[in-house]
Image (cartoon, rainbow, N blue to C red):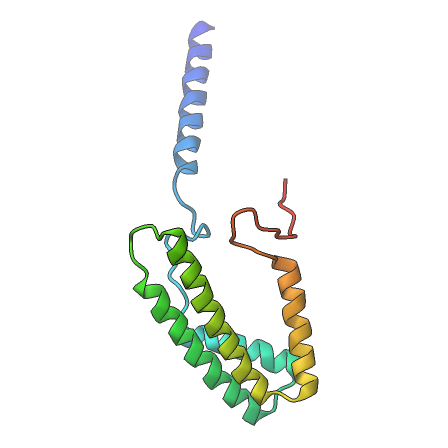
Length: 149
């Protein structure tokens, strides 16, 4: 009887150890091995979303695609330049200001393509998105999504 209990205990410990070992391996969805999307793919997805949401004409869609591709490539280039050393607070602030300026420039170019009604819809969508995500990514951000328990 004691030997059955010992065998069961050993089997249980081996099973628990195996499960713990598996839990330490990165999963496919944790981003560890994820490659960033191609700028052309990013621009295509963004253009498709805008075309659907704003009912863009074929000509507008082509112009929006070109703008989105231009800025997706700039975004990729800026990310690849980032150094391995941790940036200082001043460097982070400068990068933030630079990204904001580029984003504002992209928005201005996109607005030039859109009609006033499309601009209003686009601004509404952007405000809703910002409201959902808040300062996501910043320490102490106010992301309104609730975490699952």
